[in-house]
Length: 449
Image 1 (cartoon, rainbow, N blue to C red):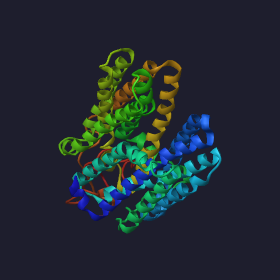
Image 2: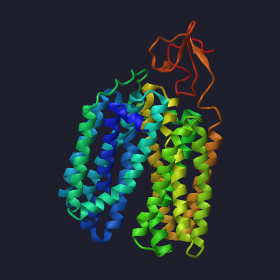
Image 3: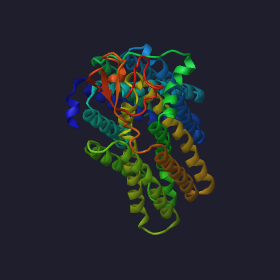
Image 4: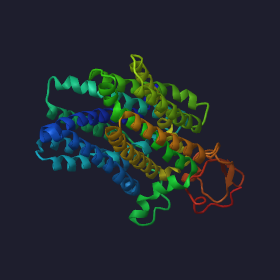
C-alpha cells in the first residue's frame, strides 16, 4: 500500500482526508461538551438531535452535489467545502443558543456531504490502475478506523491543556490544512459529461436511479443496511453493554470500541491481496452473511452470566468490525467498475446519501428499542434487519452480474467515456462490463454484439 503514496497527487489528497478526519473527530467531542454547557440536564437529547441533524444534512445534500458538481471545478468544490467547515468551526465557540448549534451543524455536515463524494470520485481518476485504486480504498478505510481509535485519545490529551473551544480551533486548523493540501494538488480534468439534461430534481435523482437500475448497486443498498444495523449496535449500545450489563468501567467502553476498530483495520490491511484474486462480490456478501451469526453470539452474551462474557464481547465487536470492513472497503471498486466516469460523482453522492439514510434508521432504532425493551430485544431487532438485508443482497446480486459479457461497440468515437479500458478491434471497440445505468448504451452507439 505505501506504493500508492508515491503518487504525489494522491499522497496530498490522502493527507488532506486524514487531517480533515482528525478535525471532524475533535468537533464531535467538542459538540458534546458544548451541548452540556448549553443544556445541562438536557444535553443527551440535544446531542441526539445534533446527530440526527448531521445525518439529515448528509442525506439531503449529497444528491444535490451529485447533480451540480459537474458545473464546478472539483478542486474548487473540495477547497470551498473545507473553508466552509473551517468557518463553521470558528463560529461554534461564540454560540449561546441550542438552535444556533443545530443550524451550524447542518451547514458543517452539508459541506462534508459536498467534500466526501467529490473526493471519492477524484481518486479513481488519480489512480487509474485497479491495483493502485484498491490499495487506496484500503488506506481510506484505515484512515477512518484510525480516526475512530486515535481521535478520542488525541482529544482527551488536548483537553488537559485546552477547553472545548480549543478543540474547535483544532478543527479549524485541520480543515484549513486539508484545503491547502487539495489546493496544492493538480487534479485530473473531470470526465466530459453526456446526457446531463433534465431539471434539478431529475439530476439530483440520477445517482439514486443508478442504484435502483443496476443489480449489484441494488444489492449495495441492502449491504449498507446490514452494515448500519451492526454499526448501530456497536456505536449506540456499547456503553450499555459495558457499563450496565457487564458492570465494567468507563475506560472499557473505549476498549470495546477499539476492538471493533481493530477488526476493521485488520481486514482493511489484508483485503487488497484478496481482491487481486477475487471479484468484489464474494468478500462483500461474505461480510454481510457473517453479521447475523455475530448478532446471535451477542444475544447469547446479553442473556448469560459469567466472566467469560467480557472477552466474548470483545471478540464479537472485532468480528463486527471485520465483517463491516469486508463490505465497505471494496465499495468504491464496485462503483468504479459499474458506473461510467462521467457519472461517478453522482453515484458516489448517492452512495454517501443512501448509506447514511440507513444509519438514520438504525441509530434511533438501536437506542429506542434498547431503552424500551432491553438489550436482548435491541440485538434481536438489529440482527433481524442484518439477516434480511444480507439475504436480499445475495438474491439481488447474481454471480457475474458485475462483469457482464464481452461485446463490441461500432458507433462510438475514440475517447468516449464509455470506452475507458476498451480494446480497439476491426470495426469498433471491444470490452466487457456490468450494467452501467446507460439505457441501453450511450447515444451514438452502434450494434453491440
